[in-house]
Image 1: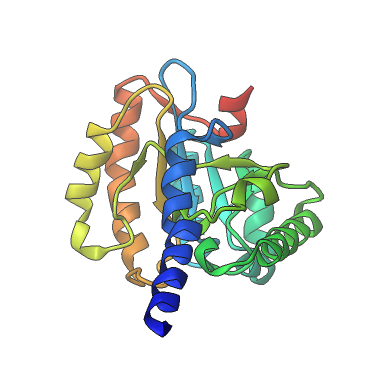
Image 2: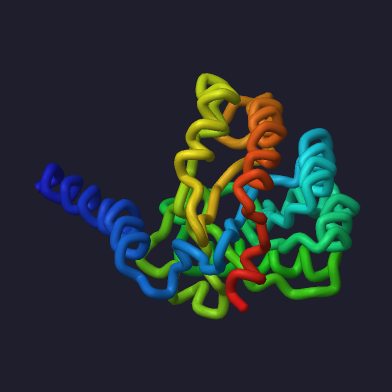
Length: 232
């Protein structure tokens, strides 16, 4: 009997977490997976802001007149409010990536609501604007994510490249970015390597790759725009 209960609990968890993630990422029309616009892509960055890497990234984007969308962790934003204000002043979009970097697989519906509310309130206090873009950490959904986040625009990606792992190398990352270039592409990158499973110095590799890739975008006649721009 105990074995059956354990098996049932495992199955319930898999349906709540892995099954829901596959279902919503594959079939939900409420999840943005690709943008629109000729010769436009959206560079997006998760897990920041980071006091060392995010300023370098902002400078690099400025150099090539590119705009990006930052899905920030609310607790990090509270520690570095000036970086959030700088993103806003430079015309980038700011979205929510939970208040702490916790998976939806481990959250109840009420726990998810608290994560969204805390990060929303933190960003609104810093910027004066209420964020409406949301990307779940690791791209994980649970059965209730779209319902709890129904007032948000949930944004996924067309390409995610392993830039949190130094083994990827900047050369491989550039190649993956180039091969994934298409109109309306949404690229998921990371400007903070301090999250679970990431290499702490991985953003250095990402920045090296972008220093090569952004000129390539210009040569190909592409621009990176914000998710907000793609939605208009």
